[in-house]
Amino acid sequence: MNINLIKSSFYNEAEIKNKLCNFILNSRRFSMWKLCSKFERSFSDYQNRKYSVLFNSGSSANLALIQALLNLKILKKGDNVGFSALTWATNPMPLMQLGLNPIPIDVSLDNLNITSKNLIDILEKTDIKALFLTNLLGFAGDINNIADICREKNILLLEDNCESLGSQIKLKKLGNFGMAGSFSFFVGHHMSTIEGGMVCTDDRNLYDMLVMVRAHGWARNLSPERRKELIEMNQIPEFYNLYTFYTLGYNLRPTEITGFLGVEALKHIDEINRKRQDNFKKFKKAAEKNKNKDFQKLILHHMDFISNFAYPLVCNNKESFERYKKKFLQKRIEIRPIVGGSIVEQPFFKQYLKERQKKYSCPNAKKIHEFGFYFPNNPELTDVEINIICKILEEGCKDEN
Ligand SMILES: Cc1ncc(COP(=O)(O)O)c(C=O)c1O
Image (cartoon, rainbow, N blue to C red; front, side, top):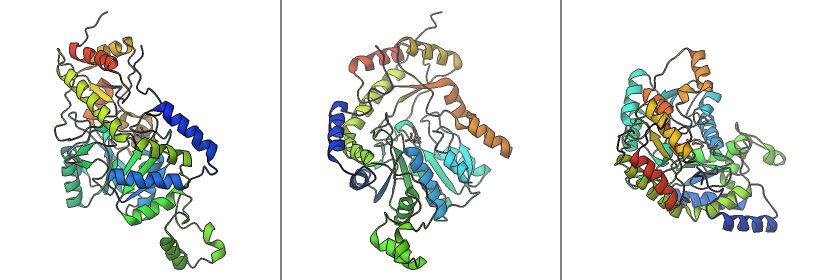
């Protein structure tokens, strides 16, 4: 039996596939339209945000967010922007691609995320204009304290929440602590639209700008009032209205299939998140009973709800890392490095650092990169599968060579 990271492309796969077939057979338009808007409205309700903009991926959501902040002149080229050293590559990539200066910030071994202490440490070395932090694997650091520091020091706070849909601290959903939060709906994430992403915000100007950045920099998808304002301000003759490009943009639009799948998937999100949290609690309890105390302990008392993405096992040293890696693979449990590992260790970032001849040390991210892997937590895991994993965690493993 294989225990895979992802069991299927959709939760309730058979039902969704059927509905998707009917949708395709009975629809006449597949480019971005009503179902994308419907998904955006229901996602805003779910997330408790005023506005949501749907994209064709989480990476596109991150790219559009940074471009929109540049277009609005909230950020400018050359600004220092802090980011979590342990994240996915397309979190810092848009910063680099768009001429900002990415500053990697180390994470805590207790929760794998940036904490206020990590932020204070970096602020002693350099100023930052914005912090684009990642809420990794359904966890967060003391994000309320981070938000307070950002407010006090006038640092723009943004959250990459691609891995933490549904997690909460003090009854507030992750993704709602800063000006905007981004989300991914790629297969295997909390909800799947095959490919897909979102940015949520309460800021009307940012919302309008994201809508323009998503589609060519034009104004077609704005409200009629906002379009009128732009037409008047730029004195655009009617003939050119639809073909006027007001700002820098891309084509990052989703299709109606994304919208359809999003609306359907959101109906199950509470159930999915509950299962992820229940599984997570079982794994955590088992890891804490480990006979040889081989693992770093996760300390997450500050979180009220943990919609865990996958379970990260960080071993105390290289030797135990190799031992557990071997054991999981022997038992045919799929494992992989923790997200993108330490970004500072990735070739694309090393190359960038070399160019600027700067060194940032992120020892905890490095340790997680070198001694850690993650194993499956998905809402379709069976009790038998969960018990197989818990047994390894509890009983530990010896080198059988
Ligand atoms: C933290 C984080 N940010 C961004 C992304 C990019 O999302 P996508 O795969 O939808 O482009 C991912 C993807 O897994 C992620 O984990």
